Image (cartoon, rainbow, N blue to C red):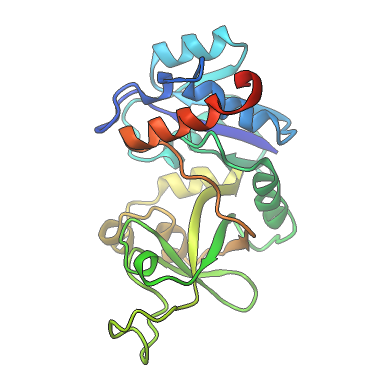
Length: 251
């Protein structure tokens, strides 16, 4: 298992986010530390910025400089795989560069899900929820599975739509919240990156829909708990800082 952490400097809401201080360490180092806890064979930060590269190498991490023109983290990972010369069957984990609190156990669970399903090209995770506020929040991505734990569809819309109780009554609806953690076979990632953006992906702004559009299988494992959210806003940044400051020794 190889973990690749895509990290770019530019961010509309938090410019320079990977270098933001989190209780004495930059955010990218917190994510790197998280990745090391999985026991991965290799951890690499794929970035387009020399400032990020310099910081990662200063704390002893491994980096890979990629193009600044990539439209998604997966496209960046595809270039990193080519640069690193990884074998086609290598399991690659895409750990987002703003997810310092992703449970290492869940990372390993997603990797095992892919390894044990040879007909799938990708694996991800989900968590069950039953409240209407989450169901109708377009910032929360929902996923529907088949009986074999394969993804049928991902959406920002409330799916599945329960015809009898989704009329504004506020009653609970059993559904699955997608967790943005991905495992791929290395050989598939370059194929994925060669495909144009598909219509569903363009509408929903969800790149995993490109995989389903082309008829490929995505396995989805269910987590018993919802991981802490990553850093997307200034408020998230303060929340994560408080979390790490509260840990003994700030490690």
